[in-house]
Image (cartoon, rainbow, N blue to C red; front, side):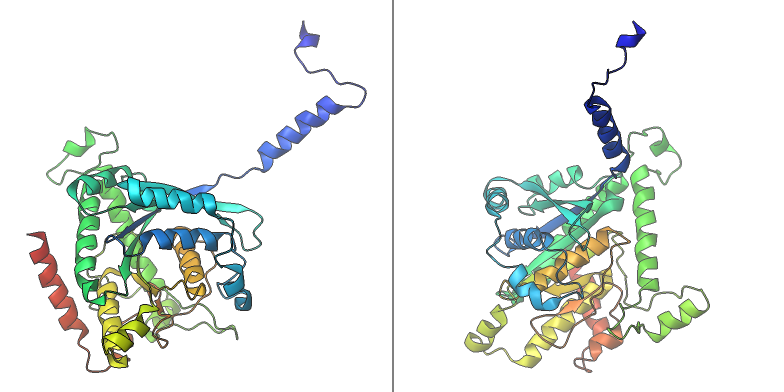
Amino acid sequence: MSSNSHPKTDESGDTENLWESALQQVGSSKAVAAKTVLVLGDSNCGKTNVVSQLFQASLHPQTGNGQDSTTVSTAIGTNDPLSEIETLVTLSKHDLALSYSYMDVRDEDNEETIARLGIFQLASDRTTDRELLKYVLDARSFGDSAAVIVLDWSKPWRFVKSLLRWCNVLGEAIECVCKDTGGREAASNKGASGWTLGKATVDECRERLERFLQEYVEPAEPSGEALAGTQKLAAKAVDVLLPLAKGVLEENLGLPLVVVCTKADSMAVLERERAFKEEDFDYIQQILRAICLRFGAALIYTSTHNPTTFSTLYHYLSSAALTKYPFRLRASVVDRDVVFVPSGWDSVAQIKYLRDSFDVAAVQGAWEFDAQRYQT
């Protein structure tokens, strides 16, 4: 009987090779980290296109991110075989209140999958739609999540109202996470504060985000010299984290937030048809950066006419989701249509550099007033 309990080996040893191969595959396989990206934005603002372009960028991880930038425009184009992905994204746009798709994050050699990003796209801020966010953000998934708010450069006069709307949606979703007991009903009744697993998770993520901003150092230049603010260098030198400056992370959501302004090529149309001037674009950028500074959020302009912008977004989201993902791109605020402000880089002084008369505190104060009025 015992002789039949083990697979017999024929003359060629095929059975032994089969077992050996199976064991090697199991032993060498690595668990792929699962992360969540929540995409929010008004109807027809370009959310679906952003998701589609992210998929295209994910097919070419070896381009962009401070690598061979000369090949980015040709590598990330519209000729990639993505019919299935585009069909999925298009159907989700028209048929689903909350759509889901995923993309693999691969190493820079495009040889191994190191993570999987689940992309959730909310159709609108209607009550029936926003209630679905409880299936995206909860006590267990919150720590592995990031959020993207998409704005439309063809209608810049809606920027602030759209940000108010979607930051409010995020705030309500995070309040629900704080109430999530994670199945520990008894624990939720301890004390007047009502401790929950969700609240503990959100508090931990808020501390992590604050520490990230305190420790931020800009990626190295090609010469290899990393730059950072004087305050951050001084803090790092004595291994002490200094408090964040006033106006920075005044509203801590606890999760990485990226504000994506799509259709940046619309600036030329605004300039031609609505008499926008360079100072107008600078002023709008300063307002967006002042609001992003308040949330510790990143800001990026994208355009389908400039595929490198989506490559930047892909690599930045990957680095936001994966702490060990190498990110090498530096901030860019000079060229009006390729703005990129990573979380942790900006400051009141940096914002005022475009136009010294700009009052960051006044903008943030007006935002706080409007946010309170929006919630009532």
